[in-house]
Structure formats: structure tokens, C-alpha cells
Length: 468
Image (tube, rainbow, N blue to C red; front, side, top):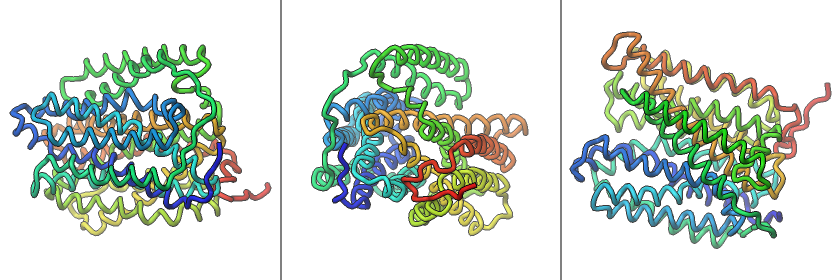
């Protein structure tokens, strides 16, 4: 697979990051507008949540297929097509006359989003040299950090000052610009040979991932426990059937043989654990500020914006830190510092000044962003070039599962804490227990971090470990 060194990695990374930012922002901004949309369509709030469900269903079904599709049609063409489908789905959402049309449009939009994330990462990996990958990944990490944080305040502003349909229409100019820039500045790299598409694997993955993700989403809702457990059980059964199928198939949709590569396996395990915290905190912190401190949505959004500022500050540090200390040491240190920093948020109380909360969340954003950058880079350090597309779809699948698990863990632990304290409305003690639980889970990533070789990813970071 040829690399295109003439293309500055900053340009490629920024183009891909902007497209992913559009998808990450859209995934969270909608939640703020759901009550308004329910009133306009004349449906209940529980019914309007189908707009979220349709999108999640498309992600669950099509993310695993992203790698083989990119291999068949080329990463650049697939990325452009994914942006186009996302934009078309956005336009359809904006003009939707009713709930049924909106759900179908969200499903179409979700197909584009499912392909955009892993294929965008694949475009980047095939366009930069290995020694540039850490810096490029620092750019690519920011959309995942900033989108969930900016989503609620941006959605609130649009609903307040414009029409909720602008939530979708703002994607049109961003998407069109992305298609043009990808076509102009990013070279197409497709393998010379094509492997057959794993149709049975596609079906089994859909039967596994869709129930698992929906089961995790339902687990946080009162009275939905039995249905959630049934879905999770069905997803687990389909997962076992897929593993059995993948071991007997020459070219499986999700290649579990990639887990034999130590750097990839440890990045998947460690990254999954820390994303549980990252999935839970954007759910918990706005509620702390709004319900416990009494701030409005705009004010709480301004405070949580500090996490995004921390992520921006990290961009210039990641490359130097990994060159100086290497992946193993950096991940081991941050694997303790990042969860502990978030755990401090569990002590937030009425006596805390807003400036202290802002500073704490900014440090958290810095550490988590550095952590994501390191994991996202080391994951592909030892992946053969002809397996890169399947590695990106495999990694993206686990990302989606872990973030869904994080939201479930945050909501479930908050509900259990409220029952423990006998509270009808969550208070500071309830939020504290929920935060400490999800951060405790991410501390387990330290075991994976310490399992990396001392020279793991040296070609990417430029770090030369000292001889013992």
C-alpha cells in the first residue's frame, strides 16, 4: 500500500477531523431538540426517541461492513460517498413531515455516519507516514472529545433562536465542503485484489451488535430491565455464533485474528475500558451542574466546554510526550492520572467555585485526549497494510459498544445510588457514587497499559527505550 508523503498530514487530518466532527456533533445535538420535535409531531417523548434508535441501528449494522466496502471501492471514494449519504440523510431529516419519515431519514443518515468514522480513520492511516501518525491522531481525537460536549449547548441555541430543523441543515455546507476537499487533496488508495464480502458474517454481526447496543440503552430505563437483559442475551448468543463463523471463514467481516497482534489487542482492551468513563461523563456532568447546582443548559454547557479546551491544549503535547517517554510509560501514567482526575469530580459540591470546576474538567479533557491519541495510534502500529481496513472497522465497532456501555453504566449507577440514599431527585452523593464507579472501571485499563512492550510503537513515537 503506497503512502502519499507529498500530502501534509495536517491537511489530511484536518479534512478527516472536520467530517468526523460533523458526525460526532450531530449524534449528540439532537437530544436537546427531542422535546420540541415531539410537540411539533404530536407524539410522546418516548416515541420521538425512535429518532435516536434508528440512527443507532444503522451504526450497529454498517460499521462492521465499512472496511470491506472501503477495500472494494477505495477509501477515498467510500469516504466521499459516506459524507454524501450523511448529508442526504440530514436534508431528509430537516424536511421530515412526521415521525415515521424522520426515523427513516435518521437511518439513512446513520449509514453515512457508520462508514464515515472508520473509513475516515483509514484514509488518514493510508495518507501519512508512521512517524507522523501520532500528531495526525491528535487532530483526529478532538472530534470525539468535542462533539459530545458542544452538542447540548449548540442544540439548545438552535432550538431557542432558530428552528430545530437547522440542526440537520447545518450539515449541508459542511458536508459539501468535505466532499470537495477529500476529492482534491486526498489520494485514493485501494488494494489491488478484492476479497469476497462475508454475507453471513454481516448478518451475524447485525444480529449481535444491534441487540447489544439497544439492550445497553434500555438498561438505564425504569421498567425495561427484562427487555434489556433479553436483548443483551440475544446479542451475546449471536456474538458466539459469529466467533464460530469467523474461525471457519477465510475473510471474515470482523477479523478476530487481529487480536493476536499485541499492540492492537491491548489498545482495544484498554481503550474500551477508558471509553466507558468517556461515555458516562458527558451524561453525568451536565446533570450535576443543572440539577445539583441549578444552572441552566447554556451555563452548564459553558462549563463543560472546558473539556474541549483541554483537548485542544493536548494537540501540541502528544507527539513530544510519546517521543520522550514512549507509549508504555505514557499510557501507564495517564492510565492512573486520568481516572483519578475524573474521580475528583466526584467530590464536587455546593462549596466549589465554578472556576475550580472549569479548571478540573479542562485537565480531565487534556489527559483523556492524550490517552485517546496514544491508543488510536498504537492500535495500528503493527497492523499489516492489507489488513488496515478491517482493523479500522473492528476498532470502531468496539468504540461504539464501549461508549454505549459508558452511558448505561453512568445511568444505572446513578439510579442505584438514588435508591441507596432514598432520593427521588439525584443529589451530590448520588452523582459522586456514579462518577467513582465509572472511573473505577477505567482504572482497570492500567493492566493493559503495563502489558505493552517497552519499545511498543517506537517507529511511531521515535522513542528509544533505555537498555536495562
